[in-house]
Length: 278
View 1 (cartoon, one colour):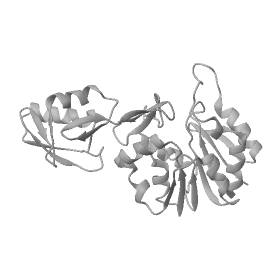
View 2 (cartoon, rainbow, N blue to C red):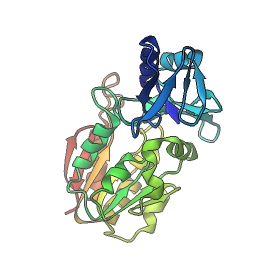
View 3 (cartoon, helix red, strand yellow):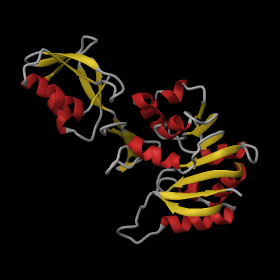
View 4 (cartoon, rainbow, N blue to C red):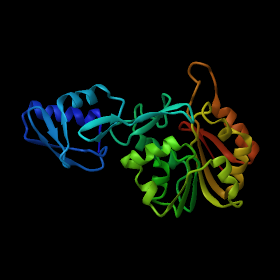
């Protein structure tokens, strides 16, 4: 069970109104649960109790998701010595996003991670056939693509990200959807195992350049082109890092390398580059 400031505020309002119980979500909006409201604590469906101090703590930490265990709460965030990065599940009004060392992996300003994912997939619409999702993250792209695709192959090398996947209720389908082939591995190496013209669609949504330079390399773009079928569509999410303060145009450089790889019809779109293989 997971609690964020959104649900915690609702609990406090119910206590102030002296309601005997209130329905909130304990799985980040997937389902609702009835909570018994006492004068000094809240009783959860499994019998656990959270006192007022713990609920107030959740309200104050509005950038964190809290796992409920043994009548206590703990943040879903941790440091990985392997990657030297800090990971946290960041709450929004809909699906949460993952934050890695302060960088959020979805757009959360003026939209939700769900809306962000819908926009990305829209650039390879119709998203049919066999789809390559190069970087799993929380799995939203793979899950949404699987609604219309025949099969989705997705890769995640970061064990810390995989741990967050397992805790995030909205990532559940990654582990039980038969249309999703999830591999714990490096997409730079894994893509070389596929035969040429294997995929109908490629969605390349890597971490920022500073976190994974190899996924922006000419060698990787050449492989993306090789495994894509003729007339197959490709979307490469880039974001706009450095554009505002340092005048860096990452899309221009990406388009140049994608063109060298062989992609056609390349154009700048929402936070990325779209193209196809003719």
